[in-house]
Image (cartoon, rainbow, N blue to C red; front, side, top):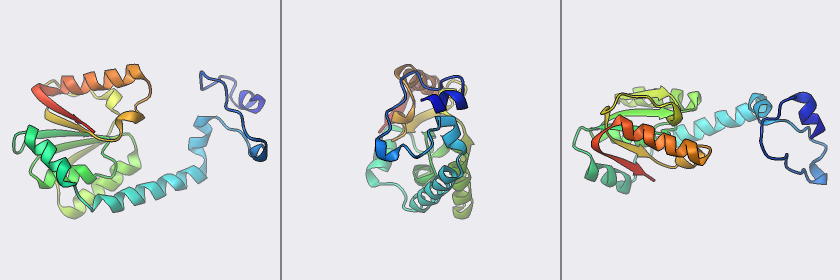
Length: 178
């Protein structure tokens, strides 16, 4: 923990630093912001983007399309939150929905845009966090928030994210939270 304080005088985490097992103490201890700049982690993120882009070609599961189609009007406006490389967004666009897809990772959005261009799909991809969502009220008929909800840190931010989505929906709009 002394190394962390010397490297970054201000602590980044409110809890105590985790104890490192003795067999791993030879590694340098870094705080989280430094880890994001680590080139090894950057290459892992690139590999993750490639893997998600590969999976995007698989399309929607029938249950996903059925769930959204049951609650949204044909051609409805759909917000895909945490879209990754666009697997769900592509499927919803193929089904005739007007899709706006947001994700926090620029690499994932770049892969999604490339995939949509390759397949000739019209999807509005944006690098944006759900915690920063500030679309006009009534912008969407529904929102699809799958798997990424647990990545929103803290209860207060999760509640705020849901409120932001709710404000962007039309009255009676649907949030599909998976």
